[in-house]
Length: 468
Ligand code: GLY
Ligand code: MN
Image 1 (tube, rainbow, N blue to C red):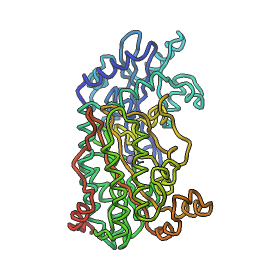
Image 2: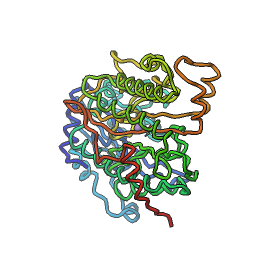
Image 3: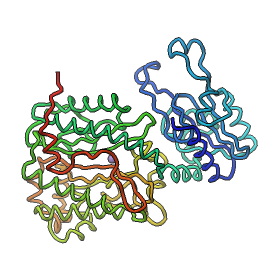
Image 4: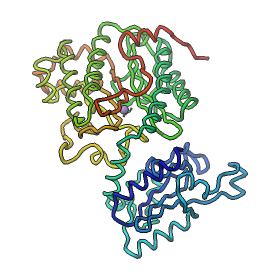
């Protein structure tokens, strides 16, 4: 945990944003995997972590706005628990670590909430995403679970987004730690990407690196020689010369701050001319987007800059044609780059996404597009100092999408479909970094991970066979 003052300060600032009532934060519970006592690894709720820091199941935090009092509700362990878990700090001791003076058993939470409801006080809560929490909230508040999404507190959501989006220096240091471990995950994967190796050998190795150096992976590892499938979690292919391998992976620190990095490498360690051509277009888009980052610039604009770079590069390669600026405006690049440029990163790998993508990423000034491609951009509004964003352009040759567009002759004034046909066996390339918005511009976080063609080829000369 951070020092208790961090959590007290965060709650103090939150109090100033809301006018009255109770703010209710339910921590996460254990979730069964295949029978009740065999659970998934425990992961605390990120809002609970942010305001209370404690990393155990079955806790609730309450901020009483009128009384100016904070509470932690949770049960002390009994001797049966101690036999299995060992001695645990008391709830009182744990609450003090979060700077909370008042702790009480969970049953007292029901009483506090019931009293607040009967006296007509507002109960602020954020959207819930786990079945267990939804049921708990529903029971506690007497609201049918399907109605809960309509009853969430907009002022609370807005305040959470406002605070969590702006990272404090010690949070940035945590993200940096997670990226440093991602450096080891990625450079190891690069060195292992040789013909004959199976994807799962590499995916398993890098997941182990995350666990042994940091925490769990921050999302299921995406690692595939079929990188044209954006989130490919199938790890059963054997690597073969001529394919590119996408590695999209990161880890969580002990305090749950995430990294999210993507690299794409040629199997065997040497780019052929076709791979180098496409790779450098993605790299240019990644670099141009990063260099455009500064406070006040709408992220949607940076997305479009990356899209234009991609259209420019693909035009130079003869895959697209016409004016690249026009092509990007009309969305022709989305045949190859159908997703958004990036997303906020922090306690969640898609930070705050559970609070509602549009509340986090859009506002009255910058609204979400409905167009194919741009609609997938999770965040479009102006950047501010302290935001951490991923920058992850890519180029993918998705045979099924190509067939549809070609059959419709879609945007044919910008696309050389005959040339595109010859790339249907190519796969995909994505390059992703985690970038802090600073007062003067940007800082790419963490230990630099090989990215240029020369850097990737250099590290891949050090092949490591870690197989048994
Ligand atoms: N790294 C996976 C994603 O950003 O969706
Ligand atoms: Mn990402």
